[in-house]
Length: 402
Image (cartoon, rainbow, N blue to C red; front, side, top):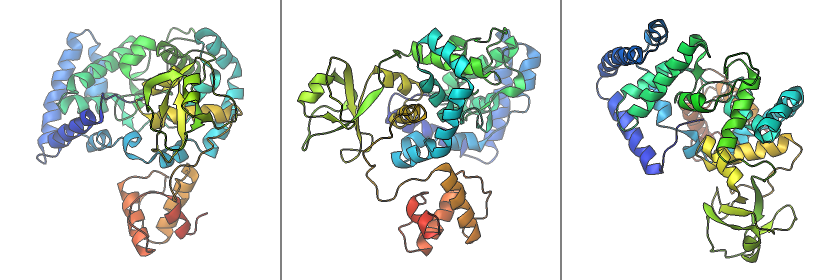
């Protein structure tokens, strides 16, 4: 779960603010955050948060350019959707999701009964957010939030409040101070709750007296279901349908431009699974890759997924994964690209091949950061391909992958 922006312009403006604050002067960030963290510590203690917790969680906070780099580059907004989907919904994640549906069947059944959210949807969120608890983030939450709060700008108050809530959660004893590992934006736990969301919607499902989204899977799954219920999820209502547009379609497009399915049928849309498009259920049309790519009619249940992280790509990743781990079909229409994206296993293999060929000398971990992208550019130039720095199938095949 990441922070939400009302518009792309708002996000872009915030990025400029962060970059300006952290890139003006070699020592300025370190000096500024030291004084800022001292102020934040005093503020936390004034709010009644235990001084020992404040000291333990903030004493070693320092300027971290990685936080700013990640904050100004969110993959949901910059990555082509075919790359995003190939990476997030791959064979390994589907296989793990299927296994975990069975392994946690009793807990998931109880969660579904309590909150009215289908178990495969809860597991899909778990898988997309943290690879089922295996990848919870590289940042110590209070330090990341301190960097963002101290960077200034329009979002400083937001991050300062999230930091105070993090300290409060630890002070209450729900999550140990050293267990706040998460995203650059402050989300933590197996299903990546922001601290304010945690305080509002986390639940103690195993009734041990602690709302533990880090080490207690039952609490994490139930809290996710509670979030989706609060966001408007309705059991039995589909998230949406893949559809085909009529030739020359020029009707309404947009998640909020809703109409009854029967109205969409009159506009010439048809379901790709061959079932009739009929009835009064309302849905909006989204075209995540433009008019030449797959098309979807999405309901208010998709809005609930969207509320977890305000990105159509993200919502579709959860929707697709939930289908596939419960025996459903993949999307039928192809993404409009001649250079498909790579799975996690393929990305790892791509890095190995780049290293073997002398293009890359960094850590081979499957993560595509600046060093890997630069290595891809060099390899693309070497093989006569347009240099993009993108981990696509074309360069992977050129390097001998397949």
